[in-house]
Image (cartoon, rainbow, N blue to C red; front, top):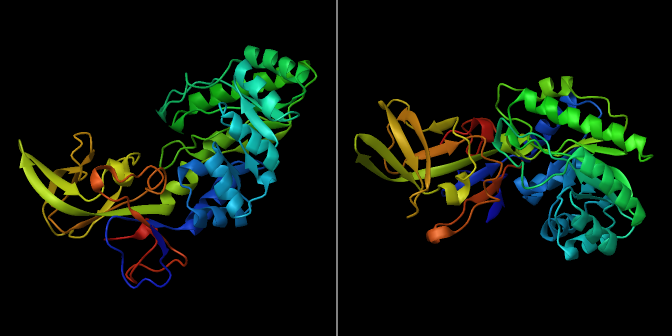
Length: 369
């Protein structure tokens, strides 16, 4: 369920995700400032709310997609194919055909099998090789599942030309929330090597995709990464998800039970890892009663799943009925939420107009339960 917050006089029943598309647009501008000349494409999987997508599209942001469902969602709001990239290196034949029919030109691959699939289902396409790069320092490493070496990519590009495909360039991914500058440096050096190889085989690249993994709320800034970005001599894109969406959302839950177990205070909420907090990174939360004694509290979700625990935090003592606001929850929250165990996912409240603190529904970064 989702609704607009423009006319809301008070917050909704918990749990809910308060989403501010304008804040995501601001994040896109911050990334553009840090990476001059780089085209920003939003990783749609991060949070596929269409109000968010419309706001980003209006700000000139493109989209990176990985499934037929995502393609259809964005086509439903008339996003032009020229603004779409598909950099997922393993796709179903039906999806490849749909991309080709829609006019999405650049498709990724990382194996001979995927290259052959594209040649059959999307003849004449431009193709980008997904390179294997280091993922050290990433919150969720992706290395091993996807990617090929530079040497393999060169051979595959030669095969691509024989099958009537057009080598376009390369793409990479350093893993989700990569906070190691050394990893970024190593990955960019691998990309630079691939670019040089492409030129030696008379296939100068037209695209270098830097992927996602841009750090949020981290000691490593995107400005620091931008300072080490090579001049690839062609179009360069970035595909952030979390960087755009995380701080644009705050998830608000309510305490439904408390307990004391072996000297540890537990607070059970009506939202947990199955209702939007699976990927939430322990950090800033806001609570209602700041005057209460502070305690070390284990926050947990409502389900019978023993893994449904969120974080241990020092907070003012929580009691039944209290609300807890989790900041930086706009990424991988509602998109991963389920109705497991019969507990509903959070409704999404889209903030159409920013409001000052204390006027009912407020901006996600300022919300106090």
